[in-house]
Length: 354
Image 1 (cartoon, rainbow, N blue to C red):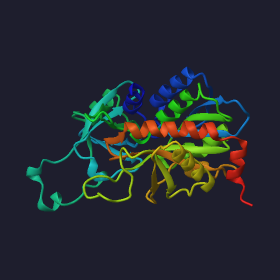
Image 2: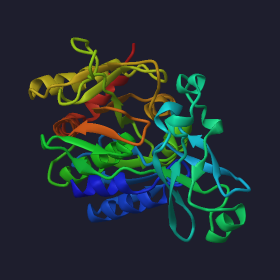
Image 3: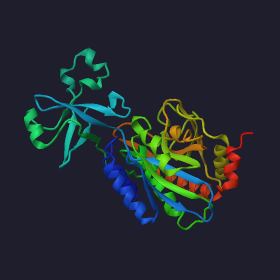
Image 4: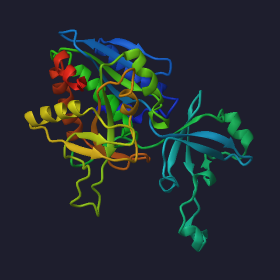
């Protein structure tokens, strides 16, 4: 888990993914894959298999939700704007890092003490536009002297930890350093497994602000089939008992429907068949509240088969999230086995509509 820890603790909000990209680059070099990049900063490693079969893209995304400094007040406080989707209620009193060119500063999103709140204030969600970050400065001149500037990225703070059940992982940015980890680990395992295709594994940029890296990356990787590796929303907290929603520890999550894509049915069924053949438990995700990079992958060029495979995660798009280590391992196993079985004949079945 050291690699996943390193990935989650690295800073990489949309547009500022460099620290995470360097880790992925280092790992791709270890796997001795051919490097592919694009003009936005997405990065992949290509590995040829035993046959000239289809080109299969495995893509996490490098970025995490965060913020950007948009104003420095006369008193030395920072105003900020979101990079990605946030719910204002999860922000107050949280620690953050402001990453400048020279160093990283710690700050806190300020909040009033309950003693001075009015009855009306106690019952409302504080809007983000009224929030500020306190870095311990006393003036705007002091902030600027330190080197903090408008445009600097702001990153949530949460250390990586495996909880006492030895399965639950708590960290920031599991959305979507999980996908980066899965792509790297699948490619690593395929070094010793024959596969009748070419695998291109890595991660895109700027997924959280509009699937932007997923728009450009296919033009460099040229996939015939694409898998977006991402997390889904776990709905297994108190009050959710008995529902059919995603849960931690119940296996890989296969997306049947989201706001950006209905997957290729033949590819979806093929993956399910492999999971059932190998007794790998899996879960189904249907949610219209968001989308993934597959929303752009599947409409690349003339259209290609695409699917989202990942794990359920609690508390995403906040400072802290949770996944199951077992789910992660089973997702990697499923992807390896699926790729070992996809040749030209199987791909043709997926794209034959008449």
